[in-house]
Image 1: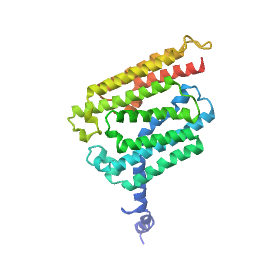
Image 2: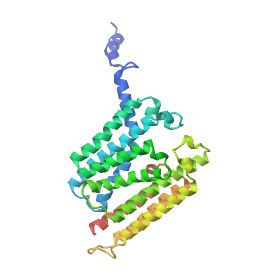
Image 3: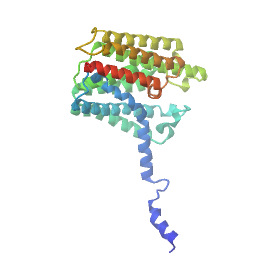
Length: 321
């Protein structure tokens, strides 16, 4: 037998035929991962917000617990994405962009997405009871139930849809404190809640502006988007931005002057960076280009620099330096 023939005999069994179960399984696994939206997991870093605000990030126990909470919230949010895409598969096939989603494209069967989503929705709160505490499990359960209700019904209810999405961000910001039994101040809740509403309303406003510019029909975009006017959405994000800034200022100015011999009043000075960050983000909101908040936060260098300056000031305030 020729050398080419021997090589063919050796390598041929390693080649997967088009209908090979292994290839299909790998393709489906990749599709499930894409459906779980790894790009959106950056939002779950908000779980560090409450411990950071309380200055409780120094211990190894805290960091370990926050890593667990991040994983649990990622599982819970992935469950919602899986169920949402399985439920909306038919509508997504008619959408110019969403038709590429794995469930809509046929890469992942809807039944598999439902099963994976259901398992994650059950396992995340159950694991929270064992690894954290019952309150963390209750908050995760509330998040999953509320978001599934949003997928099924609440996203079709005017204004309530904004509140539900905002509440999801607020729960992310709260759960780290709940898991570590850190009291959540009223100023933290006000700033986090209205800051989230600012970003959610800015996202909706950007989508509405783009829909108008491209003369798209409401049916080709997000549910209810055609029911909102751009003027109303602009009012909401401007109001939310104002309340978030006010809440942060009241917290920062609650104690006057420097604390415990600090070199400078970092807590008060951080107000400047916070307001600059809101103003910088508002530029993108006003242009109608804040449709993907994670892209704005990660790609704009100016916003990144302001964020780092704010974080440094805040850290110095917590450390009383």
